[in-house]
Amino acid sequence: MKIIFAGSPQYAVPSLKALHEKFGVCAVVTQPDRPVGRKKVLTPTPVKSYALENGIPVIDSPRIRDCVEELKSFGADIMVTCAYGQILTKQVLSAFPLGVWNLHASLLPEFRGASPIQSAILAGKEYTGVTVMKTEEALDSGDILLIKRCAVADKTCGQLSEELSLISADAAVEAVSLIQRGEVQLLLQDDGAATYCKKIKKEDARISFESSERAIRLIKAMSPQPLAYCFLNGVQLNIYDAQPATAEGGKVGEVVSADKRGIVVKCADGAINIIKAQFAGGKPLSAADLANGRKIKAGDILD
Image (cartoon, rainbow, N blue to C red; front, side):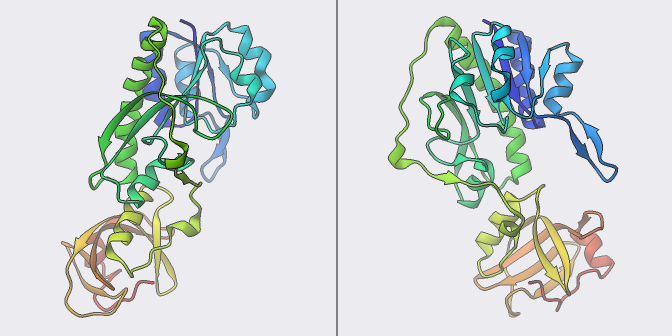
């Protein structure tokens, strides 16, 4: 079984590593190097870095559609994709005799699209997971080979992504093993039950303190990036994590207490307790540090 792997971020590395150690990956397809940091240092994707460290050939063209002949030259049976970030054309899909298989971080047909992990948290889902599907030209609509579930609980997006990344690795090995043995039984997706999620924009991360539940979901969904935010005296405050709280009195958005236990902010239907936050241009601080330095104090208004 010859495998090409397509992916880019750190999230995809455990899947690449698991497949390479189990089966051997003959080539990697990833996004081109990008400028990173204030100095704009040209930096390879984490997937490319792993491939280079392990002697795996890399294709990092801006457009995979321009690389069909190069893909075919490896003689791969299948391609496995995970957080790759490019549209696959019919010509790319047809280059692999046993198909292209995608590791998607939701319980399809729920949350097709670009932000499935954030969307599961925002929707207050009890469970999410990883779906291995056969890729078609339409968005995340292919037939399902297998599904693995996990609890959302009160995890941030970063915490949930780490868990799903490891689950994806297990799912990738299991899926390729099934394909290799010819034990492929596919389940059609119910298009009528499909939901879609868009790419997250900065304006989507602005906090409203009308609903404490929605505010906490937003904070967890946007952590560690792009980070949910509000403003204090015109200065942006990015919030990493928060918990439900209770508060007597105060108006919506008012800090009713600020001490080592947290920054409690009144909402229309309750309150939230901010655990960790960061002023724009500053470093992340615990609630205790924010309170001790009187960077945030009771009576302040967040909006």
